[in-house]
Image: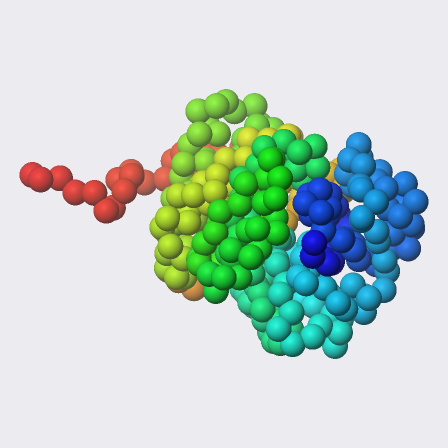
Amino acid sequence: MAHVSLIGSGSWGCALAHLLACNGHDVLIWSFDEHEAAMINEDHEHKDKLPGVTLQENVRATTDLEEACTGQDFMVMSTPSVFVRATAKKMAPFVPDGQLIVSVSKGIEESSLKTLSEQLKEEIPQAEIAALSGPSHAEEVGREIPTAVVIGAEKKETAEYLQKMFMNNEFFRVYTSPDVLGMELGGSLKNVIALAAGMADGLGCGDNTKAALITRGISEITRLGLKLGGKAETFAGLAGIGDLIVTCASNHSRNHNAGYLIGQGATYQEAMDQVKMVVEGVYSAKAARALAKREGVSMPIVDAVNRILFEGMSAQDGVHALMMRDRTQESMQLSWDQ
């Protein structure tokens, strides 16, 4: 049995708390909200974020951040990406040297263009940082539906230790990877493509459109990811195309759902208000565009999403702009013999 704390009490944090408790670990969830912590402790359920999932007796909640950072075998950083740096700053004085922290959120910081692991390393330099990513809706993990993800770490022994901690059950399969950067880029950038897929559904487009967006979307993600140092195998795996497919196609996806509302005419703020959760793709869109510009990488879908979100372009005009781009070859790595 391990002692584990989850820093963040949203749907994903509670789903992972349930998973880790099923594996026999002693689990502590940190929340900044006293009402939320009391709900978890008294009702053993987060009725707002993860209704219908009963948390076991070995899960409890606290609002004391120092308590959540003390005496843990490993910690899970499950706050929304936009709050990771601020929360890490508050945690830093309480985190002991060598503490293992697993980042499980997905996003890129707009101001610095840093991944979540990079932000954690800057704010809590004494900690060892790993990451978990892949196609894994909280609602399905909470219901113990078979799921496969990837754990990434700089050290093989760290990845294998976490693999064992998360995988001691019949419904959550974990693979390991040394490519933390590629995993985080795939997990962040797919949210932007999922917004586009949702917009297409909101416009009434069909399966052909969805397939085109997913396929060309992973092409864009891979181009940028390779330029930044990620590995091609990662973008072809669970943390790349796997995560992209599930986020573009599922009604559980807050990014897809927000995109759908935008496709029907809502502003991004109206869409986020209706979804009632943090829509990571909205916050990652500008960062993705800035990275593409800095690295000289063509990302037309990401560019169109930015123009729709922030520059007043309609979703219909965005589709038209993508369809009417100049003729080009699908893969520049392929060539004719004659």
